[in-house]
Length: 256
Image (cartoon, rainbow, N blue to C red; front, side, top):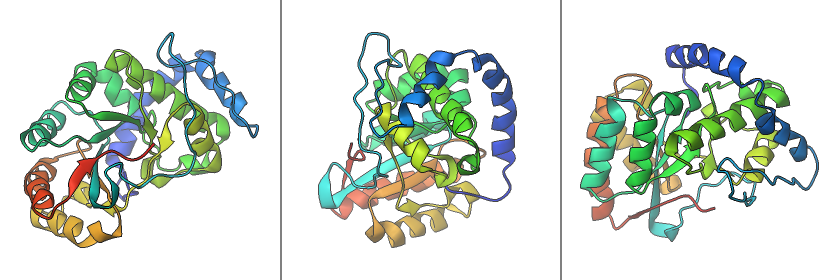
């Protein structure tokens, strides 16, 4: 998600993550993989899914859609949330749209049933760190590693073995190290072109107008399904998705 003021949501997630971080400190099989990233050729053989291989991907931040020039990537951040994620899923299903859900590790761990619903509906998963710390780019490499790899583990376990395909840094706080680490784990760094500003709850009309005005700048659109009342997001999606179809856009996923 984009950087925002008033990080009450971030503070809550950071608090919830503290216990998880302490418990996960001994999970060296995950953090130790960061050692392989320090060199020019990461060699990571283990996987979040037992028995499956990890295929490294490009470490550049992706924005493009696999549907080409008229493709749009719908991305949903900060969940899953028991109130809002099901409503977002209902709207996406109503219009036959597949999206990429960028999940916070502690949220995924708390609501594995919702993670499984997202996967069962044909959507893709994205690692959005353990605790949504928008200052990650100012922290140590060890901290970045813990946030990325522990979230990967939490999301994969919650999904029943389906790995996240992307990594989106909270607030866009990427570093060369975090991008290289994520890419070595098969998670393409994921940016956005259109910040719908739905997190600020400016009103449904404003959210719709922002997307319509900024879409010519690129195909990846940012929405949220957690962090507070997301009713405006749900209604905005209900208006934006059919409008996009009327304009001749198709819905895809970020390229890998």
